[in-house]
Length: 199
Image: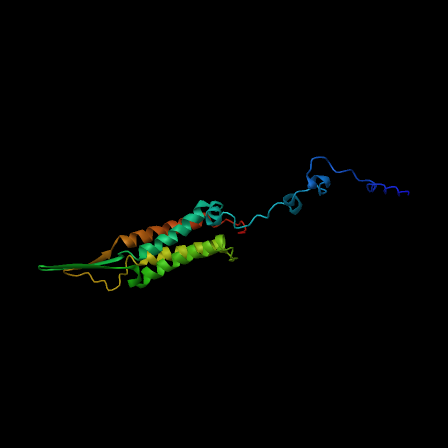
């Protein structure tokens, strides 16, 4: 009785290498083809934001005189809340005094308001990128108007009466506000010829 010969072992597919002897099934597969570029290099550098750094970075790019004018507007508001006008009465043994803020008389609060408007307009142009025609002349005019009003407040005191036993005057809030308005006018004048476009 004859027996049939066993079938030959299956042959390897053409063009493939036999598995390695490391015993790791994953090692029998070739590594994936590399595209030649990393994900970061393919997508390019990350875009930089215009607002990177926040307000400190934006302030660092501005002129010191411009920042000073904005700061003076803030100080003007603070000064308007301090004792501005002073009143005193001295009759016989009676002596009393009182003080009021800048918002008690027209020239006081209007002068402060003009100075704050000058600082606000400048801040809007520099930091909010609001296009304002004739920006420098507008800021100069507002600060100058503030100084004029506060100078008038030196002579016009609301409810003021100087007579026997009565005296009126100004407190340190007024002098601080007047100094800020004059300084703002001077700085705005020095910057009035600045024509650089505000980005």
